[in-house]
Image 1 (cartoon, rainbow, N blue to C red):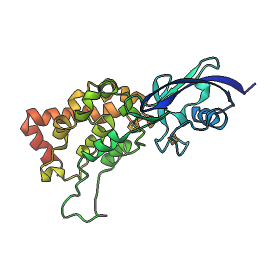
Image 2: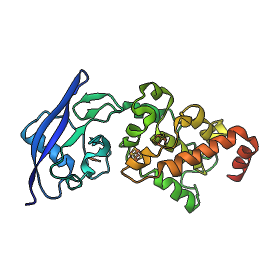
Image 3: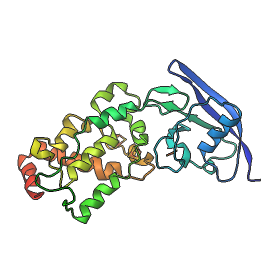
Length: 254
Ligand code: SF4
Ligand code: F3S
Ligand code: FES
């Protein structure tokens, strides 16, 4: 038959601690893990806290860990698990728990605020910006980010190292620095902001040892490591050790 009963183990608790709770719950053809969590709410645990919004992999709200792996609850099909396997659902490990599956992700908002915004080129009216198609496409990939923070949760630099958090922006925000650094119209340099250098000196790029775990968990398939972090490292190093390369980059952009 297409319906069966699955074994679920869900973390329940709050800031004072908690424990895994077992549920036996019906699963139907085509369902995703979020459907099962909703069924647990509807039947056994009406006060089970879970954050979600779109159920389409686009809002980035339903991030949690399934069998220890950071994933979107709404995009993980039940069919990927053997029927007799216990499915364990826990909150994101790198961020403080609020209740049950809901974590406090404000670390990420704080990191976002530390990155200076795009600086429009002086003397060019909005609407008169022109970019080459290749530059548009490069940043388009990064702009697919849904801010689910799965990459931030999985990166080993902070996952088990609370002490690294103040100095490390995490892959999502280093990618943001890379995007702005590659942007041909960003005029931050003219106000004395060297984006690649700040990635190294202020946002902890040096902590990243390119393990690519961030890329592996990204639900948007963004090649965070290859297309953002490694190029950013190359540019940061070039400018630090070779002022002529830095100058060349500046002139080459005009
Ligand atoms: Fe999520 Fe990918 Fe954006 Fe990271 S880069 S927050 S994994 S969508
Ligand atoms: Fe972390 Fe990704 Fe670098 S997982 S170490 S930011 S490649
Ligand atoms: Fe929106 Fe899962 S509910 S991404």
